[in-house]
Amino acid sequence: MSAASTAQIRSLGRILTRSQLHAFWWALGIGFLITALGYFVPPFIEVVIGDKEISGTITFFGAPAVAVLITSFVTAIDNSGYTRVFISQGAARNAIAQANLLSLAIIWAIGVVLALVSFLLWNVIPKTERLTSLFGERFTVGNWIAVAGAFAVVLIFGALVATLFQRRHWSKGVATLIVLLVILPNVLAQFPETVSVLTWQGTPWIVAAILGGTYFWMIRGVEVK
Image (cartoon, rainbow, N blue to C red; front, side, top):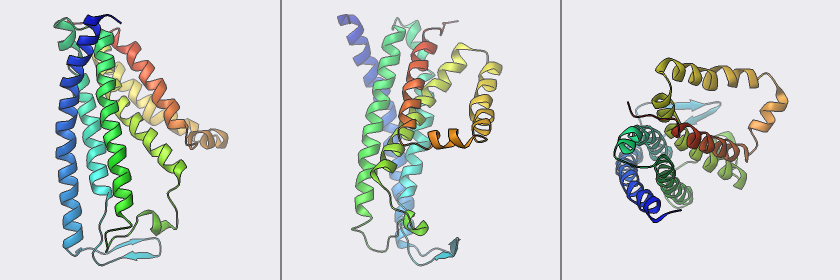
């Protein structure tokens, strides 16, 4: 790797990571605000899950997680939308791809660390109830591996979606998403053997690797019009 390529990756990485972190911290703050309201304000609606009624003051650490997940996905799409701008300014496509994936890796690492911290806080902060406990389940190490992989899939998929629509006509992009998100899952669900493979904890990481490779391939075909 040449010095010029390394410099491009660092420069673009700083820009993309700054954008990701800006949205990330805003989303996290809003999520914790919702959590605080759930902690201090008694709920007006009683929730029943199965035969268990949730009442009283309950903290849902899921609010920050959902806010971060959605925001990180949208920001990954937004950042990848600048691919043509970077190319027109002389950036190499490989450098753009590596910088984007680097920024996503940083967000992924921060998200995983914060998720682990929030999981530990479930045992410390009173008046909280684990969502998983409502189903009589325990969050195992395997579950964490799968969730961390799923987070990586969401981030890389966001980058891939934006690149897809920049390389192909929008109709082809829509058709591809319908096949991937609607038709393919329904077809695979018809085969029990496939379902067991898809629910394996390592599957998200395999999917993330495939999406990452596809992203590198897709970005090579993005043209500046």
